[in-house]
Amino acid sequence: MTSITRRHFVQGTAALALGGLAATPKRAHAAEFTFKYGNDIPATHPMTVRMKEAAAKILEESGGRVEIKLFPNNQLGGDTDMLSQLRSGALEMFTLSGNILSTLTKPTSLYGVGYAFEDYKQVWDAVDGEMGKYMRGVISKLGIHALDKMFDNGFRQITTGTKPIQTPEDLKGFKIRVPVSPQWTSLFKSLGASPTSINFSEVYSALQTKIVDGQENAIQLIEIAKLYEVQKYVSVTNHMWDGFFFLINGRAWAKLPPALQDIVAKNVNAAAVKEREDLAKLNTVSEEKLKKAGMIFNKTDSAKFRAVLAASGYYKEWKNTYGAEAWALLEKYAGPLG
Ligand code: X2X
Image (cartoon, protein in one colour):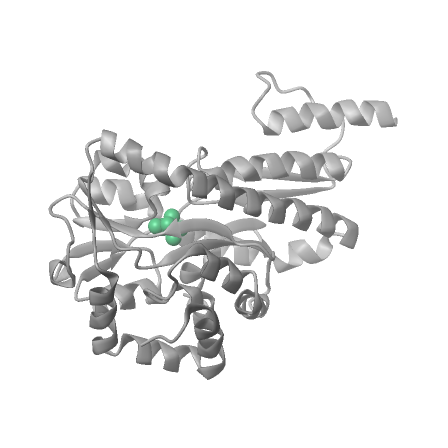
């Protein structure tokens, strides 16, 4: 292939990856490395949008050698399925909440401790700093490579179809969906609720059929996933910040020559940074859209919820589980807990 035809080839496939072409031209050559990337959020979420752009750049900068195919919105199955696929190598790339990854090894949910972080400054200092490095080290022992930058999944708020959550008492026995994660289940049990683990792929229908009465997520995703169609109240609790690790099957990663690893890492990390900015900008927009769709917002006093958690022994239990070293890292960024 001459350099000119290669450029045309690359432009053509980049446009394809962006969904810009109606017809699929026959590719002259398959890419040397073709990776599937799966996630659990819609194609319109900034994480998918930025990953689409990153995939196009990676194809171009690698001279057509690395192609990443996107499978957003649980097309490959729910998070639990995709995690198995990632481990077996059937799926090479996957963005997953560290809280869910913690079904394999607890310390990846360290950042998910309830009411730990107060704002984004604390969050990014922690996960871009020493605490993030610690968690990525834990992930590498699973034979999974985690790239440096986490994508933002936002501070989480509780939605319900029945009543606003004003105080911890309102959570007593409340049937709430949580992701499949020991940290999430423990958090809501400790708050007195009755949590059920359900993958995000099933959340809309679980709310619609009233298997659960509520769920919790960041308002950007509540809006993008149209949960306002099946929920009425948004109680602003900010009970947890969540993010996605960009995970790569270790064997697939090891097969990539270092120069190509650099191209992938550079572009995906840049996509994460842009996605964080996108989500920040979306925050007020999503709130307005949800209000327009008829959702009713209320504020809560986080000190009251924190006090219930402390009294239940939640912080003590997790300090024991994670161990002193990890807990010290968390408190370094979040301040004293418990
Ligand atoms: O499952 C969820 O609620 C989601 C989409 O926020 C996560 O991936 C943790």
